[in-house]
Length: 227
View 1 (cartoon, rainbow, N blue to C red):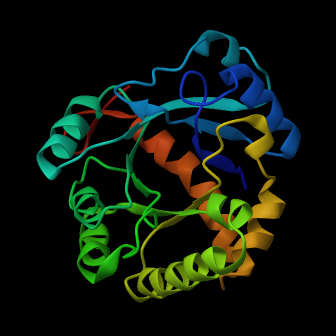
View 2 (cartoon, rainbow, N blue to C red; view 1 turned 180 degrees about the vertical axis):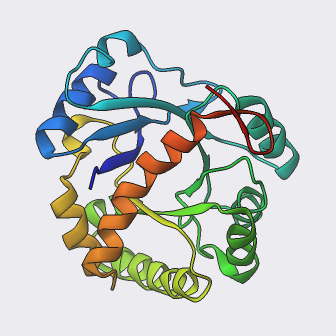
């Protein structure tokens, strides 16, 4: 399988250049990375240098940050044809649900930034619109004590919903520097602590590559692809 880090942030959103991130990810065993800087403020610097790094694919996506549902849908529609991969920065219950209701969205990122998680309504919408849910393991690494325990309990509840509705799952640490990156093997081990089986975790790491490949295809009409 080809594994992807699906929600990576580079300068000016993060602290490292795209090429530095690509080199670090390649060394850790990734086949590709998706640079999803926050939109509209975080257009990545020096993407041309990252694309010259051999042995790893660099896809350019965007992570939408919105304060209301209308703004989210408008931004998703405007970015859909320009981005290889489209994520939404979640955490707020309304934004989580709006992202899952939008077929232009590929992935809901940071759904556990608040206290509610995705919820049943958002899970049903994600199933209908084929929106993947990102298991962001960054908090598991950075949090300590009771905060980490509460976060893990909330994530486990949502993983039960993800299993119940058979939702697509992706795994990331949402790295903002090369020091935040973890190898696919490490992510599989961390996900297992939350009850995610090894095969499910490996498929979650490979799924972003399939989504990018699908998004790069262009269709003149239903069933007619532009080659």
